[in-house]
Image 1 (cartoon, rainbow, N blue to C red):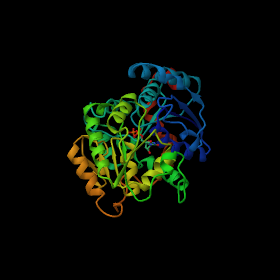
Image 2 (tube, helix red, strand yellow; image 1 turned 90 degrees about the vertical axis):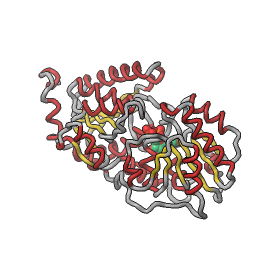
Image 3 (cartoon, rainbow, N blue to C red; image 1 turned 30 degrees about the horizontal axis):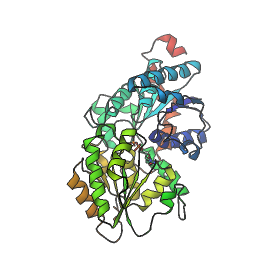
Image 4 (cartoon, rainbow, N blue to C red; image 1 turned 45 degrees about the horizontal axis):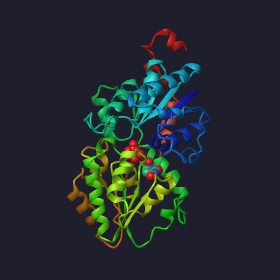
Length: 382
Ligand code: UDP
């Protein structure tokens, strides 16, 4: 059996690394194709998880335009899957890389397995273009690995056969457990700004990067963070995304503000360390909504929709949109006491055993059969 894992962004590395490791531990041949959508954000992560890259296509990032990038990635991935036989192509989430790889797989009759399948907001504009990507990826997929019962229900509502959907939890929890074992007591952060964070401050961890929030929405969140910094008892720590528009807004509104620590994107172990120290997270990230519950950490989600309603239902998250008052009062309420509040509830995204379940399902050859049925004979034979 031979499996191709295709990825190109930071969250995909984090969430597919446990699958890579689980397949390798079963002695399965795994080739990794790296498209390099996030070259800088990925620095260090591939080594941290011990991943070998078989096909490195990182030059694609220079291409202008999302559609051009997806087109070029699809072409490159197709050339790889035509050159050898693969039993599966595995994609994760909702990125351009995942869209390209799923499309290349489907059109070449290579069965596609989708990790973190079935997330939906129901709004094609939010998040954009990820909601579109997810829906197209589901159309290309043979085996859907849903992280939660809600994600499974979304897929069944789209007439996907129940036997093609496996509820396995989210591999982000597996990755966190791997990382936590390495950032246990006495960990010294790689980033010097983190290494010198004072112990007696209430840390508000913020991240902002969603394309559709850039502009007025993001600026409103930044104004709320700036005014929270003026309270004096809190320290706002914001690892700034590399997107130039995000950087410009952050520097304009938070540059040189007392009680604000701006860093570049953090190495994953540093970020995990920061999650252990934070009192509250303010974020528009998808992955962080899944990570915060693993620490019992409250998260204020600066979006108007979430494809992860479980984080809200389980009591970890609140959708605050870009509402200045909701952010300021939410953070103040969660930092009012003398010690960080921790929410004592099970993590709705799983128990850290997702990758093993995925590897077991992929190595069960019965799972591949339905996809190839409709493909032309010459593709089936190749
Ligand atoms: N992350 C990181 N360093 C940072 C910020 C985030 O390693 O400075 C990790 C975080 O732990 C999470 C993932 O990156 O697992 C989330 O990525 P991002 O927010 O870029 O993407 P999304 O999950 O929204 O697709």
